[in-house]
Length: 362
Length: 275
Image (cartoon, each protein chain N blue to C red):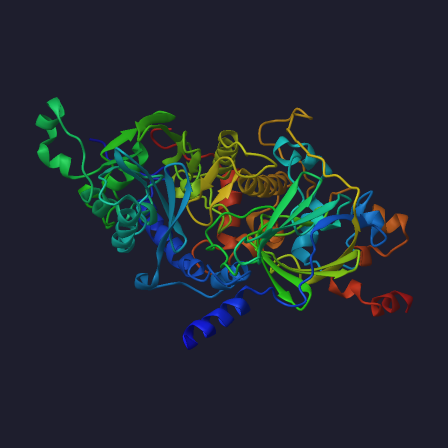
């Protein structure tokens, strides 16, 4: 079997991404703990939290939930989000947070769903702040195994939930670069898809797994719960940072914009550009279409500025000096942590000035 | 027996309405003598005079293109509560009263344009967690300070303070005071935004009680007004907004002053240009 490599052939890609994803969580977890009941000051506290440094102790991270609508709950652990859909047939989990939070995530799932079996996990992308709890959550679940399949995989397969993801997620998990830790086999996707869309029907509603090509990575999935009218985006949409473009793993700025417009096409506001379809981001607060539109507008405006700078022959350093994102830096930028404003500027510039990395299954 | 009497007295005290609370209910017509050109016809492009905006907000406003409002996703947005009281629409205030205690547990405000319906919780409930949804009107809690209603609002969607691109982030916070003087209502509001305002923005609005106003519905459905490429967002590139100096030119105001900032709100700022 041909060994898979990242688009640039760099064996460092996966390890960089693992570090980046964990750092993304660590660097932002402190903020969410500061929100909550203090009247009127949650927003300012959030900003202070970002400046205030990393939350290093997972023991202090709370995992809390919010019923969104229909069968869907948002589960927040610091600033990383997961979602669950609960019904008569059991529980479907979208993303499993970082491994150290898996027990708390499982406890929150049990609080909401009782002892209903966890049947499915969907991973929106490969990063360990969204897949770290795969093994523990999957082993807490059950699959329905029968017929020829039972003979092929053994009855043991029934003692775990199935894990769905885009094929590129499994490729990156199963073939890490030299020296990189390989996630345990039980954490890998058990079912992958290579098309633009995969459909499920569970708990009385249709669920669409929508591949977002070359956006945050090359293996992003947006999950749309059609009856509950809730979209779970993974990291193609976050509202805590400037767009996170993972060039080494096939991400691109234009891919993120395309994905944001895709989400906007799915969402329908109830009235006055509010409510209706709700959107759970990979990181940050629950939103509806208007918030995604705000973020799409920002990302598009920034993209246009960079394209103009490149067209006028500006170098990356000149683009940095021009501070082309300074109107959004305060809200979404950072001077420390893994995804600084400079890191975004560099990724945006490169993303627009070089061809999109071609990876498998796009 | 003694305990029962004390419990009865305690119950009376608890259920008695707080002294000096004003009744704000009714339909109020906006008094437009304050800042009328900005509030009625609308602000001019590039007029940020006297507003404590940051450099970040200045760039954002200079990039703003009014054509953005033709994009379907932008057409039906109501004014956020950080701006709605500046508008020309009637304001209806309604009390929700608990039948057992006769306490006001919630106050609704409703402004005609785009049906800006707002809840102000008076029952002491906490604000939602940080990861909860934000709305145009935000999450508001109120309390009385004498006969003044004080309201704290957060969980706001990214909004605006003026209709010429002066935006607010979703981390803005607003403190309001509603003060009734007979048939006149004074609304004082203070907005803080850690990213777009260097100091709190403080403004007042006036309303007069009216007995013969009706509140019409305001349905809205977005349509394609301009055919564009999917995802196109109208805006001006930095330094290339051809309209940005028109306000300063028209009114013979220095461009630097028109660009706003906390300093431009102070009377002594005028002396700077007279020197």
